[in-house]
Length: 623
Image (cartoon, rainbow, N blue to C red; front, side, top):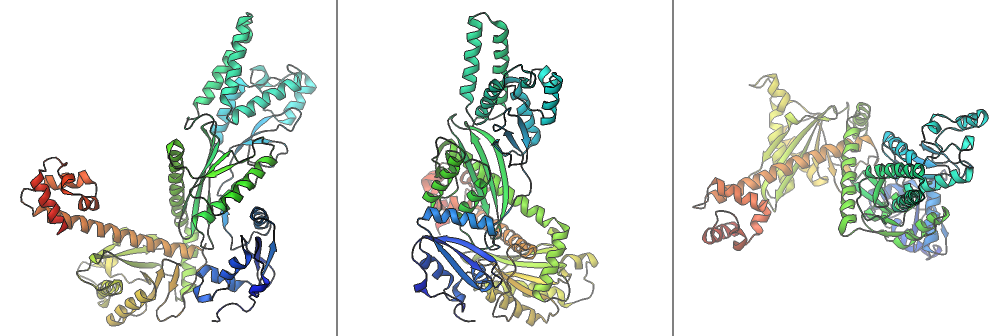
């Protein structure tokens, strides 16, 4: 393999100013679009020796046949141009977005002579003001139904409105007071437009203004003894307060913000967006990002914001994100320009991380929702029979196996600074975990992880030497002596070599072996100088990653249990410290780590522990 690609441009040819670059393949298809404050410095990173590049970056560079760039005046212009090209070319190596559902919005068609309010999934209505997105259609319809009692604007279809104009008879909504009936002249079109603007203002978070006006009108009507109008304003006020009660107040009433939470792993990221207007949560949206290149959280935030506001949605005055990207100032300018395009008077947008207070607490809630969404996405994906079948077929092809790996076993080692060394074995059959066949290994002594892998595999493979029916019958064979198609170890070349040595010494053949290196998600085969690279968004890599993560979880759980048991044993040997006091110690400090870190004075705070006994406990744990 050469140091770099043959088509690399000369460094002197690349300008040093800000700009946007595009990698193209031999068919001139755009593979990747990126921006840079300094084009020469950024592109030189791609043309470093291939062996030093991140694996996915190397794959992109090797797939490309040329690179071109466009110099712009400022970093802000580079940001805008990058967004435009990503949207136009949809490059395969840029972040790919998956929105598994079409979200409903509340729209008010202010561009029409007689505006209407409707629930729609179409975000391209001309002149419409959008609110949302929301997760439940019924919840929006319920809110609209309550709002129409207070602000009776038109909600009927164009055909219904025209029919009412022609016949001079309003529809049912007009008869029951949920429409001001401009179709038959009960109010003028200008008066109805004013009602629609109040409706939009209320939905935008100006609750106090609309309610204050309703209270003022009610008092004014009462003062002139117009009790019929006063009763109507009273009912309007009651309906507005009822609608507000359906939305939980989470922040001050003057807070308008979009709060983003992102949870990611090596293959995907789940995004949650909470829309807060007037201090109330008005909408929730979630989507999934498939990551092709290795992006840090800041770069992911930038791409998520582009995806969120590239449509008709208007950015609020504040956007809360998990971390600030490097070009946060340019992002603020871009968000402000999007806000200005929609006619918002205050076009400035603040991009920041919530540090404390109610906003930070809500940001934590959004982040928790994102984590749950990622778990749900991975669970649903692994539960798809078609996806699992395709994953097994792809693994068979990628590893050169004679048949699909219907039974896979994965091994991982866990220890704490060389103590309490344990290993785990997890089993997947037909792409699903078989938890009743998981096994745990305690390793008395080992020099390093490779030796631990060798010992674990040697003990496991010993059960495959004798192909006769075991003493426990067929049931025992299915649980442990059943022959796997594929053995996976957590690690790269050294761990695979150790596992191969265990197989050779045991005389086991006919079982495929591989290892997965966590940092780059590479698949290593025995006696291979180069890894097998599976596509980042493939179901095959997703399945291997899942079984590796499960093995890691199972090993960590066992290792922690061993540590806790060891501490309990040590404490139980101290005179005057019985089982109940040991339990009280662990309950008080919450973890073994906290107990080991505590001094004698802190230990005396535990019920039943005096200063002398506390000092003995402290000295024992330190020893």
